[in-house]
Length: 103
Image 1 (cartoon, rainbow, N blue to C red):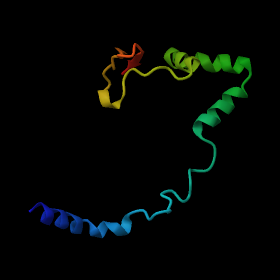
Image 2 (image 1 turned 90 degrees about the vertical axis):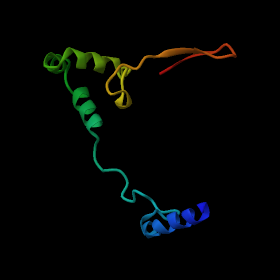
Image 3 (image 1 turned 30 degrees about the vertical axis):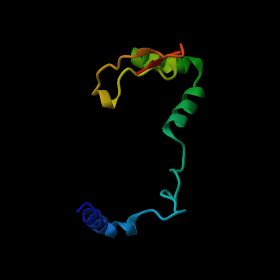
Image 4 (image 1 turned 180 degrees about the horizontal axis):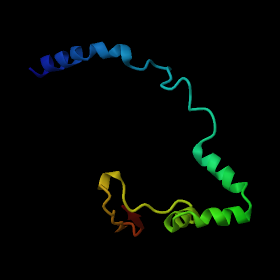
């Protein structure tokens, strides 16, 4: 009975074969979008500002945003899988004596 089910399942999806990638075929033949990325553009604009212009611009920004910029890439304590809830880190001690933090 199980063998018959597998054959039926295979036949059910045969029509999709025409849409599958062929070996050696790129899924993105055009490559990534051309032009500057927003991050690069923003970095260039800020880099080219005078110190006075930077100080004036910073006055218009939220303090949390400024702190995050200064930190570079701050730790994230939540993600989409936690529904915005804080992810608690756990210190794990292995039998070989090594310790590592995990989330």
